[in-house]
Length: 300
Length: 300
Image (tube, rainbow over all chains, first blue to last red; front, side, top):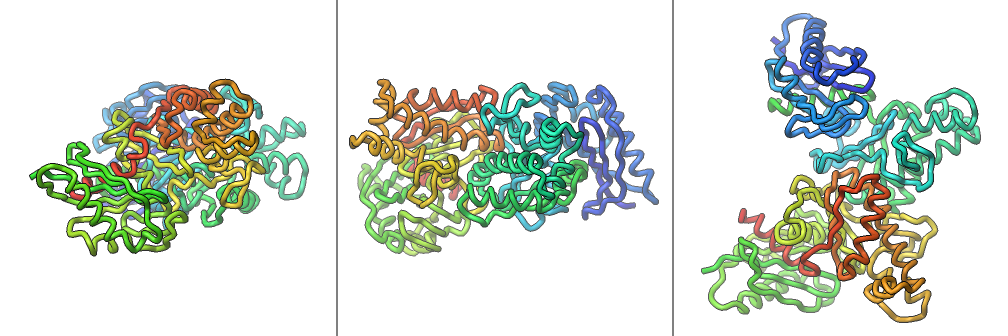
């Protein structure tokens, strides 16, 4: 009987799950919409995901552990979801809620930190031990790997999205002005361009138009990258980062994103030996990361 | 016979050494000028320090280990001083050089990282596990503690001094403009004020005059603090820092330094739950830090 773990990424809009073997083979994956008020129902959600995934592969699978990755403030050691604006919970006993329904060990992780672990084991950071991971999505958070280990401090670890980079900059959903998220998130790039041009479009559209030389798109794009570099350079210097890994849908823009970011970072750091690359796992980093922490939990 | 370790802090101008017991009692301390070309002579320097320190206390002392802390780029695991501008070495086998003269285990550390360990064990960070340490001296570097452990990435870990914060800002000794060190180091504060006023004075003088309301002093002081906050906020957010510990001689300025830094950090982070305090060990953090890594090396 094959052995595997189940990784579940609980996002604000979708729940992604993956069945992964100890050698990193992905046997099956599922995606479903996140139900309203999902927090207390995560036990049933997990059981359902395990059933769906094991049912999708031929032959029996021995599920060794379940890993669940969530956004927001997470206490991984205690297994508590301390706070998530998107998922609407506060001090939720994630591990207890899930363990009451699942008869294998349960690991709880932060989505971005788990995602970085997955990139390190299976993705674009396999060769690097000192990494800063920044997925640019609707929102923005970060994770740090030093000497191959995740760096986790207090509860606010990685919450870089609402640090103010440009005082008196654009208004953010959080009520402040000039937060990183209000300039450099995929959401902000699309929104700022649409507001100025009156055309509906997302960050991908802005990337295409910036590449084609359209003036507003170039300005919005360049400001997003400059702002990101202002935030990233101090972290790279303080943590001894050797690879900055950019994730989220925006990495489809490729060198339109990475080249100017490399240039900005080199200018701010005064050295050009920090690599800037696109993450490899895309929106699967959360579920594969959840599987990674499940494998770690059972020592596989 | 009492047991103790010797910690030696090799600075650009002075070598400080301390004899410290496993319980953290400092039995003796010495300071001497750093001789020119000290690198290859660190073996003799260490033997001399051990002799001086053990000779200064009544009764016999069993020296269990020697710790040596140095600035610049350090590979602590390999015991190599990779590069130090001030001390003029490159790829120097520190551990080998010292171990050839000393018959106890030798630990090699980075001065600021070792200093943070000392503040955590003996100083102002005893109650905190998630700390960012920034000693403001002639130069500037940083160290991060997460969950009570030092965060060490690549060789450039902690080298925040020459990250550019203010493009087109004041010229730095490194040839760039607007580096953190060119605005926020103790050296820069004194120098900038002296250049504008034509009066010879150091950072302490600027602090006193800023406190008294003198306009140039206030501006130089405020710019130093704003620049520091721009650098510190991203690191605090990414690393989950709960205590920012400011070291170096500048902390004698007390709340003249800490209050505006607290205000700037709160404004940039959008939350006020990050403590900002003065380090307790002052310029002894390096030697006590070196003793700390020596104690760790022998499991005491």
